[in-house]
Length: 117
Image 1 (cartoon, rainbow, N blue to C red):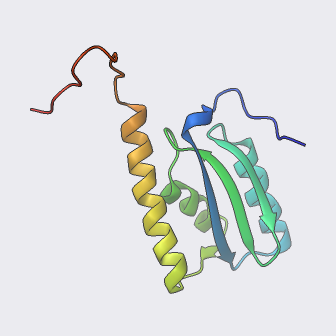
Image 2: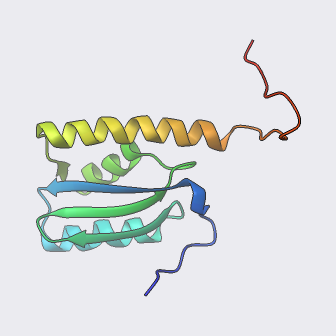
């Protein structure tokens, strides 16, 4: 079964984020997932076994840092292992790349691409 996409999110800018979150009780987990699912830039959020959070976000308007801020506001924190830090660094890089591509003005195939000055 395919999941329905929110109308405000553009499919080409959807990013999938998997974070291991600690420090949340069951009710706080429900609040975090519910708040994320009601956010206009979040396509889908769910809790997976092992304190994992799986989120699909619209990368042109939302970032991993904002996601982690929402988690911190509810009392949780992202684990700080080597692999998790590495993934977050990669997530930040792709966030910046997607935002830059979303703001890029497309050019036609028969014209020369714009040159930075």
